[in-house]
Amino acid sequence: MTTQDTELLYLPSDLQKDLLPQHVAVIMDGNGRWAKRQGLPRIMGHKRGVDALKDLLRCCQDWGIKALTAYAFSTENWKRPQEEVEFLMSLFQRVLRQELREMVEENVQIQFVGNLEALPTALQAEISYSMAETKNNQSIKFTVATNYGGRQEILQACRAIAHKVQDGILKPEDISEELFASHLYTAGIADPDLLIRTSGEMRLSNFLLWQMAYGEIYITDTLWPDFDRREFHRALCAYQQRERRFGKV
Ligand code: FPP
Image 1 (tube, rainbow, N blue to C red):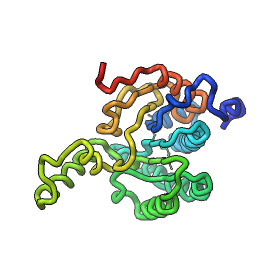
Image 2 (cartoon, helix red, strand yellow):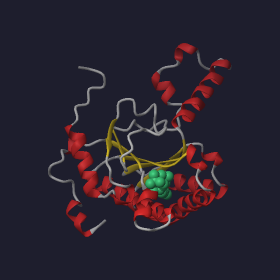
Image 3 (cartoon, rainbow, N blue to C red):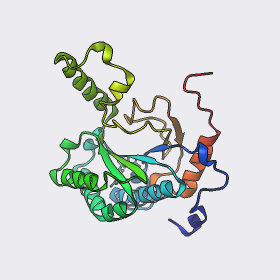
Image 4 (cartoon, protein in one colour):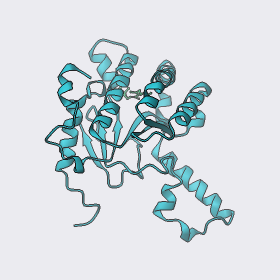
């Protein structure tokens, strides 16, 4: 948190507590561009990106937001240069190890969604450990999408349901929205109310395709490492101006 942000330690008075989103999701874009602008290697952007994410998690707790989901690594991100992929994998592992104690103390429940089996074994072990250690925590649900792709998530849900129909466990007419959602990686996690994307790109990039059916989208030109409480405050003000109709008039 910067010194300027300390004035935003508590919920700003222009935000209405009962109109806050319950669940905020973020596409943390622009780390590479941020680093380039500073004349630094791309990986420095990811390191600063971790700080921005930690600040946002803390801010959600301070302001009473109950769930935060961050897109850390997409199924397409494997196509990046090998050294960047390796750096990101070791960064996830290191950050998890360093932050676990604080997450336990702060009552944060961390969970990971995505095709986790394809991640390095040591990272998988760190993920399982951190999820087990925090599973009963209740102050905030912090979900990290890692090796996540929305289409792949939908396909694996379809396959799982098809097998159950084939085995006679389910009938085709049993397939409802609720049943389908319970086969997604995000089973048990409410849909996001607000998705924030940094660095000005106006697309979902295969993130939470099913879950974002009615979620509000907020896009800012700010690059992810510069996304701070002030920016989050702006996003929440914009969200509170929106009229959510869920298809009704
Ligand atoms: C996108 O920016 C960012 C990523 C692919 C990585 C995001 C990951 C973190 C911030 C680390 C999170 C850590 C944990 C433990 C959850 P980009 O590289 O695509 O930026 P660019 O579009 O400017 O190149």
